[in-house]
Every structure is written in C-alpha cells, then in structure tokens.
Length: 549
Image (tube, rainbow, N blue to C red; front, side):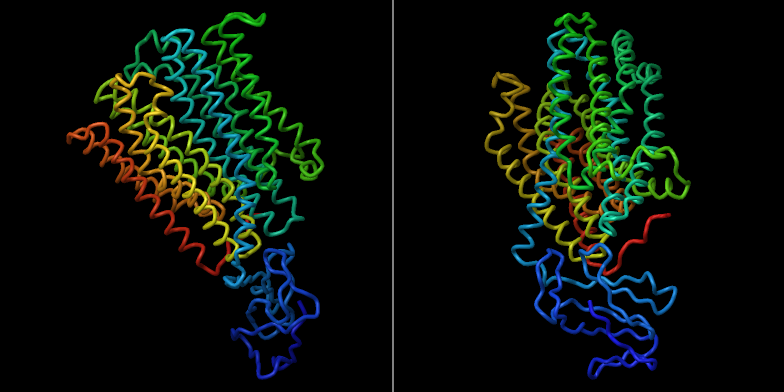
C-alpha cells in the first residue's frame, strides 16, 4: 500500500489527522490507484482497505504482507515495534462467495484425508475377516493385540499431529520460508521416533502385563509374538502420518490416500497368502497376518518418501537434508504443541476402552452389542476427524498470515461441515439402525441384535456433539492451542462421562444403555467447552508468537 508521509513533528499528511508520539489511533489508508486485494484475492474498491494502526512517532510505512495474502500493518518506529502485527477484524469479507470458497477448500482438503483414514480402517477390517475364518482363538488373540497396539498408535499419532499445525502456520506466515516447514517435519520425525521407540519396547515386553491383567496364559502365548511382529512396522505407521501431515499442510493430501488404497489391496492379498498358505506363500496363520501388515506399513512409508523426493513441489523442501538434526528449544516447542494432542487422543481412547470394560461386567451379549454399535460410530467419526485435520491446516494458514477473520471463517465453516455430516449420520442411525446392525448380526432374534440397535440409537443422539468437539479441537490445533483443550477434554471424559457411565450402567436399570448415555453426556459437555474455547480464541486480535529459530 502507499506510504503515509509523516513529518519530523509526527503530523500526518491526511487532513485533520495527527499522529503524536507513543499514541494509538485508527485511520483509513488513502485510496490507491492500484486495486487492493482482500483475503479471497478479489479486488477491493478504492478507499476500502481495512484499518491500520499506528504504534509510534516514527511510523512511515504501511506495507503489504510478506506472504501477499492477508493485510496487516508493520511499523518500524522502534526495535520492539518492528515485529508488532495488528490484525483487523474483517467481517466485511465474509460474503457468500468467500464462505463457499472456504467450504470448497476445506472439503477438497478433507476428502482425501477421510479416504486415507477409512483405508486404514479397511486394513484392520480385512485382518479381522481373515482371522475370523482361521479360528476363534486366532481372532481373540488378534483382538487383544490390536487393543493394546491401537492405544499406543493413537498416542503417537497425536504426536504426529504437531507437524501439520506447525507447518501450516509457517506457510501462512511466508510461503517462501521452506526452512520452517522443513524444521516442523524434522522435529516431528524426531519426537515421534522417540515416542515410537518407547511404544515398541512396551509392545515387545507386554507379556507380563497381559498375564497380570488376568488374560489366559494360552491366549497370551499367541498374542505376544503377534504384537512383537506388529511392533516392527510401528514406526513406519507413525512416520507415514508425519509425512502425510506435511503434504496436507501444502494442501495436497491425495498421494497419501492413493497409497493407502493400494495398501488395502496389497494387505488383503499378502495376508490371505500368509495366513492360509495360498498364492505360493507359506502358511503362517496368525503370525502371517502380522508379517503381512508390517510389510505393507513399511512399503507405503518408503513409497510416500520416494514420491516426496521426486515430486517437484515437495522436493524443494529437501526433507532428507539433516532430518536428524534439531535443537532442544525446537523439540520442546514441538512437544508443547503435540504432547497435549497425544494425551487428548489417549484419554478419549481410554474412555471407550473403559466403557467396554463396564460392558464386560454386564454380560457377554452387552460387550458384543457394544462393539457392533461402536464400529458404526467409529466409521462415521472418520469424516469429522478428516475435517478436523483439514481445519488444522486451514486455520493454521490463516493464523500464520495473521488474519484472525480468516481463522474464524475457516474454523466455523469446518465446524458447520462436521456437525452437518454427523447430523445426517445420526439420522441414518436413528431411522435405519436395524439394517445397519444386520450387517454384523443377521438374526433379529439374537439378543445382541436388540441391544446393538438400542446402543446405536444413543450413538445417533451424540453424533452431532461428537463431530463438533472433534472439529473444534482440530481448529484449536491450528492456533497451537492444545494444552487447555486437553484439560477440557480429559476433564469432560473422566470427570463427567466416565462417572455418569458407571452410575447409569451399574447402579440403575439402564445397564448398557446407561453406559452409552454417560458417554453422550460427557461428549456433549466436551463439545460445548471446545466450541466455546474456539469462539473465545478466534475472537481475539492477537497472533501467536513465532516458533523458535
């Protein structure tokens, strides 16, 4: 934008406007013959550029943002004011075309992420179907192993979520600053590598813990070797998530989805051959499934790494250059963002695991029905989870560009998309619950069928709030606001949902439905708190401090 001439006495050239020393005053920038651009790239009418703020006597410039995307004022009156950024409210920009444009961008980013997550679920489902054909004992051993493996995987996935949050803000701040994006990926690889090493050791020596928990020794004897082979590919799964976060921050998540789709087919063929001794492969039964899954996990990590290495846009970031080098301040900064995410994920997984244990005290039919209903809830939850990851990127890009109006727009549109989809999913659960349960339990005469339909009705009630809390949390991650949301979520899960589930499930006649009612109560509370938190944070005019150098 044009400079505003300021005399030595601090008097501005604009009529009736004086800018005395150390004062703050709002003034409109004069009209420019060159069309100015709003956040959506559209030309603004002359004289309508947003307000800028004077921060001192020696102010003499109003500059375009370095990234060329979002307007702000930078003043050089003193050393302390050189980095002061003022973010104007831009509600005037929230026109219908801008809202539609943001919605399209969020959907385009979220769909491949959702596809990737559904493909990961398909891999697990394929393994379950194959082992169910093998024997009940093999299926039980794999279920026990996956419950332990899944807990550690979700925790480390939370650590990987710091990469897209940090990379998106770096890109929003300056698209040309590849160094900060590269550092976000490198720090993610190091921190998740450390977390994965701890998880792999725990998985390798899980036998005593399983025996202590009361599991049958013959079941543990099958589970531990299965877990040890799965642990070999554990790091590959987590590093794949880090690299997936990197390409998502660049708004190109499609390669990861394509690779995961290929992985589903490869896993099905390889595991079928190794489990049953088909296709010229040895018959390894339960261990064959673990070998096949670990092999596929390593293969898709290598494939994604090679794609990034030879793609023109991705290769410019030179991720392989010194990826093992970092500093303590950088790793601490990354951990402060990602560790609360991991704990949030872990507390939610722990809540549903505890709910399964409560169901176990009610009876075998209740546990089976709980798992069937939860399977459908988990499938639909993949969509708001994908939208949440897209919201992390979109909000992070706007926050990095110091555009809080863009932050609000990206976050609220993402929340609306998540709530809208989950409302449709809840309606489907309510109206077609019997048909959905029949996919897993064909006989309506089975006691499991009736219980599962009842539980799915409760799932229908909390679909909307579950989507709202997931996407609001993702939007807050884009602002690097993770510690307070972790406390809000953990408190809602364990101080509200779990006690309510215990009381309603074990001390009332509601039984299994009481457990689900307790979950619905806790998720509603968490959704209200996280949406309120995002509304409060996105309403501020402040921006985040830069990451450590």
